[in-house]
Length: 438
Ligand code: HEM
Image (cartoon, rainbow, N blue to C red; front, top):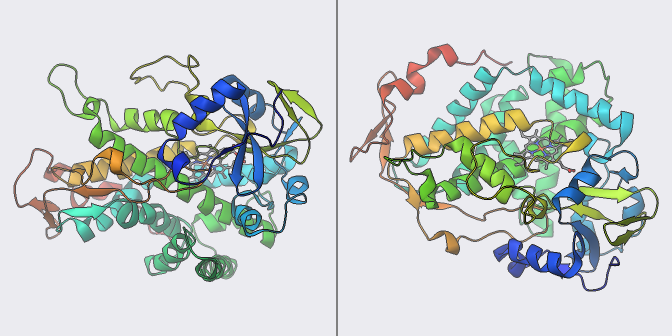
């Protein structure tokens, strides 16, 4: 039987970032379904690395399994490593860290607000922001699709959905992206700027309600108080941004390096949707971000787990459990845990897939001759236990320039079959224009 601490493998640092699946394979061999790991210097956890065991945890949330991290927090040392984890696993009044009725109340607010946005409007908005961002680098023939595209598109979109003018986008993107890999001083300044954005957002919507996500959230029958509303909105941005950035860039990098995604005369090519599903299964963005706790001591698939110990469901390892799922290419929406499972399964999975598919399609449609600027094996992955996340995604393509409205939006200096026709241009799709937000 494994215990909590001894023999723990490290889930941080360059070795894990370079090859997480190799680490999961060794852990499986040594420990079976649940393995002891170290997620930051001196901070340990049980990692659930088996598909069946992952379902046992996620589908029993709220009973033996709890999402309340406070008993665990109370045991942590006062170190920089422990403080650094609070952004991801520190308790807050939101659905991610609640159980039972409290979780359902918080969760319904987010699900209901997303349900207010018709898919055609979401798609039109994503297309608008995608095309704007692509126009900024399309003429140069090269780009970093992490920094110049993926890290901006969802935040620009959220700023608009929240009911703020585009001029406020920079405050959101700069502050949230400033938290990434920042020094403690930079991180503090970015957190303060993010806090200011959120509080100005709420103040503005208390004063002047509109037809937007923030107003729907404030007026939801769940009657959130100010603090709860702030945390639910923050969770929406926080839980949405990082996995979405990674889903987009992991998908694009996979499509550009796997011949199954190229058009083939005999077989046809797999689609963007296939690639998204494959990434969600084999390289999910929220790789190990399923924090759970037990409410009483349990023996769980060979591990002895006590209250106040952190259990992380590894969606990445669970999805790749040998023999858990059929091998080979799949275009059948095959089962995976890329969006989690059970009571805490991602409440925004459908809009997230729509946003991701549209964002990837715009890149593939508008940039002819797109290819990685370096071999996939040379891409650099960010260090850290929770996400499967590229530091950069450098690409090259045939330079194209935006044309005047009403014409084709892009003119390639050397025409390519993937240069879009006029029929795909946003200027030719006024019926999809979103209704104005306040
Ligand atoms: C529009 C973008 C997104 C939003 C607003 C969003 C929001 C959320 C929220 C609020 C939760 C907590 C639900 C609960 O505890 O009841 C959640 C959970 C989750 N989301 Fe999303 N999400 C988004 C995109 C994504 C994407 C792109 C992925 C993966 C590629 C993802 C994977 C997950 C997973 C795995 C969980 C479960 C976490 C756990 O087990 O604790 N989400 N999401």
